Amino acid sequence: PIFEKMTLVVIAVNALWIGVDTDYNDADVLLNATPTFQIAEQFFCVFFLFEWFSRFMSFKVKRWGLKDGWFVFDSALVFMMVMETWVLTLVVLLSGAGGGGGIGNASILRMARLARLTRMTRMARLLRAMPELMILIKGIVAATRSVFFTLALLCLLLYIFAI
Image (cartoon, rainbow, N blue to C red; front, side, top):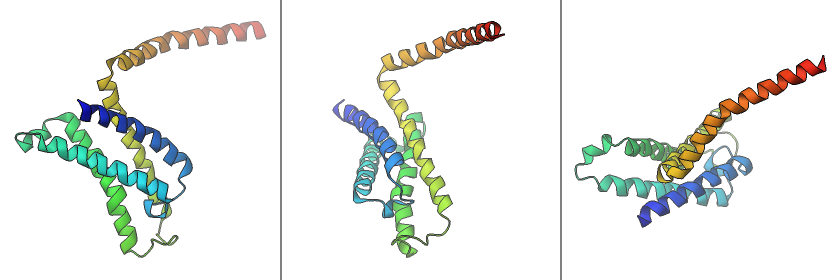
């Protein structure tokens, strides 16, 4: 349970960090980012890879990992994170464009940066770990219909009395 709780905390911190990274990191690739962003990305990548490896090794028959939906989901997220953090950085270094401009089409790299936001889907694990939060979200969704019709009624009344 300690490792699971620690993982949930790291997922929550990673979600906050993605927001900070999106707002304050202007670099197209990790190699051109400030050291703070590089260190944080490396930490999260190493931690989630370690977590994935620990879960993989816990399967008695390794093939059973393919039947576990959360493990397959985490495998895809960790794969994308490793590709972005280490493989893309290696490609940029080997292409000789690590010093700043000239990496080719930067818009493709910006699109890859947007793919980072898919890591926010890890927050679904927090919902699974805290059922109270899920009950709260279901209540908000159920109340949305009533709020919409109240807003429509108010707009109708405003329109009628404005004439």
